[in-house]
Length: 139
Picture 1 (cartoon, rainbow, N blue to C red):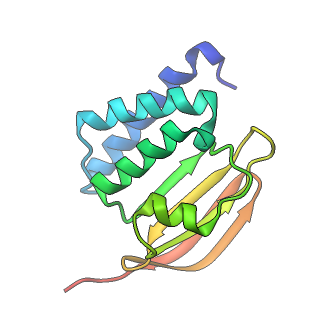
Picture 2 (cartoon, rainbow, N blue to C red):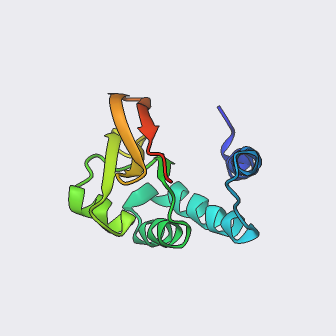
């Protein structure tokens, strides 16, 4: 387990590593993303996605980036309503799966664009959301 005083740095390092893998895959994130992740970390430490500020940042990130798939951990939300997910995503064309938080701990949320990705199998337990599926091919 990461000590609390080293947690933010560890998360930022993980983001930088993930960003490097994304670049190899042709997904590029600019330096503004690092600032956004820092702000989200600060909010996550307080309230997870229960925080209005973090919800706004997540919505902003999705609106600006238009990801095909989004994975969020430590949501700290016990139940997501479909309308809330659609507001995050910006439209109704979103498929999602969640592992609910237990009290103020855990919580995983995955969202994907129905027009880009079709899940074939979803497995959820308290520590994992596993999605098998296919990306649609474009001409």
